[in-house]
Image (cartoon, rainbow, N blue to C red; front, side, top):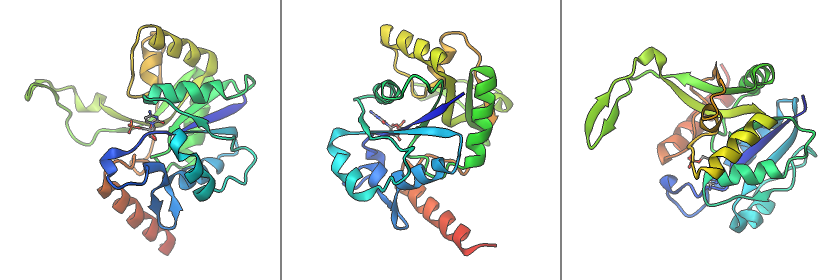
Length: 229
Ligand code: C5P
């Protein structure tokens, strides 16, 4: 199956602070979005990379991201919610791409090995997500009081890429839109159809840059990796 990836970079990243939109924040000399695209391009199975940006960031993209690889498409403009940005990205990908991966640009440390494993499982099964097992015990809380403690061995933290057969995901997205449901990830929409979503264990290093400490950690890890063993 021909495979495309939607690279979501239309969020503001307010929790990171600062004036620069998150995707264009510098990490050791390159923007987060550049690092994400470079890592995704390491996976040769992607025939199309579809960046989704905020309209106000198009000039930053032209200045700070070099997309020499012909697999990187012209960016499209995202929407107010993450799910709107996913829909804009999907609409821009040619129909021959029947397997669609969705990735947060804020997960700039994604590895080609993890991508290959989740794509392979999704191609076989229809839907798969990378996730990391929870190290801590999870509490469901309402008004400051614990309502449930799910068994820790059943708790996983969803990452991206999340990968789907295009027809299945298009149906899930249409249902969510018709019912005015907004998910915080993409698999949720497919789960609402009652379709199984496979979980592929990803690495804890594929974390989402959200707060300044995440950026500092990513810089530290990069320095260690560049220094070698
Ligand atoms: O807000 P959250 O951390 O869940 O965002 C995850 C990813 O979705 C980020 O890479 C962000 O740029 C993207 N996003 C988007 N359009 C929005 C909101 C978020 O592309 N309207």
